Length: 181
Image (cartoon, rainbow, N blue to C red; front, top):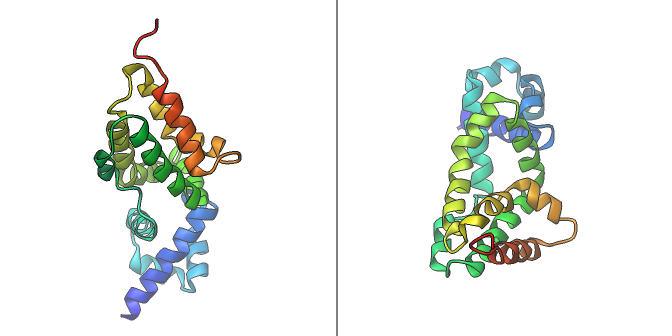
């Protein structure tokens, strides 16, 4: 039981640091200090950095899971589904802004972070593009990919709550004509 508690403290310390300084900038010394353990204790629990990243991403998503994309299929494709799906996604971004900003930033240049994002987050975003794309014109599909981005939500967040930002993007996507004429 004590080993499980120690492991949990290490993972919680790492998650906190990943959400504030980012996974790429977090050191073993910082994690050990925050968890109240020695470095050798850290390495006893996590001899491989990948194991720590898997544990951290698992804990973060356990605390606040990504939206259940398949549930959106119960909604009518088009504007209604877009609004609800984007509102749920933007609400998740809002609740997890620090974490998402650090992790997604580091995924751009840190291979292990990129691998974990691909494993833990990308399947949800790929499925969201499919489910929300039903009822959206082919011409609007690239705009849908933009709407799903954290950076898009962050741009809209200062002036729109998640529901307002989702409505704005749903309206924009719904108003793209099927052809260029």
